[in-house]
Length: 334
Image 1 (cartoon, rainbow, N blue to C red):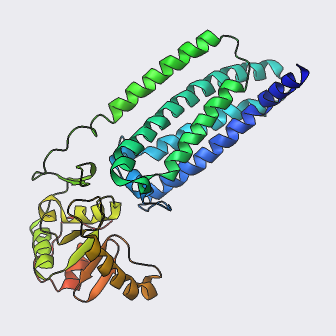
Image 2: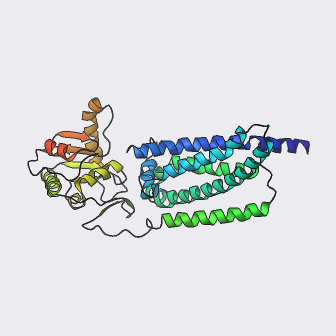
Image 3: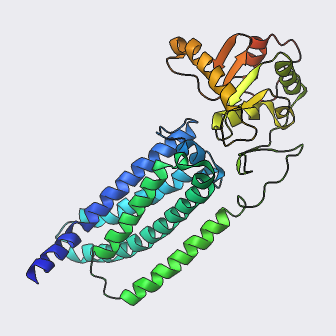
């Protein structure tokens, strides 16, 4: 019995610092994703799952990166876990009050985060891994779900809860509210994709899953440039999940996208031309590697005998292709 009490008291003594450390790791993970998303970059990842998942509509909530809300949640958990430890031992009553209050907040927060994270695990498996294979696994998402689960377990085991019944009841309420709220947030994504119209263009996978929606309209200059590029056998090589490719299409606008000489390179995309892409991107990499210091990525343009990697302004595309039509483009590269 004495040995068991020593182990339990040790866990209780270190539970707050451990929860705080996990929260800091979670904040680092989501902070990196938030900064990358807001900067318009792509997260470093050994698989294509990060691009697939983090570029999808599931990664955006209320017009902001989902990682931003995760960052705020992890910061709150770190404060709840560590703030009482900063209160001096002389003020025992204040510290006890702070510990009791924050323990309850830690329980509610970790419960909500765990259920939300595991719902996203289900989404990752059902919407990405099943149709696209194991390469669609997002390591950042798995890391976040693991950290949330560990915080929940430490919150449960890290102290002696007097009223277990109240804890269970609160956990059920928080879980239900979290799941209902999550389903409400993502309800519009699970609706069948509507056909493209004159006002919007949906960029989808081969299975019809929507990754981006373009609503910017085209002007005469955008339409004429797209037609010119097509007529001169220029090609844009990209992937449906690539946010920079979506941004390139956005510059042309809804009406001009269908005129763009676009080649889908992702095997899971609509009408892919994987072998063509592999050959062309190989040639592009040989030419561009000495110039840009890396292989060609998405998007890559082939205009004449030249290759241009990355999103290009319409003005530059006009110059590269010898376009002489109207150049009062509505949409500018930011």
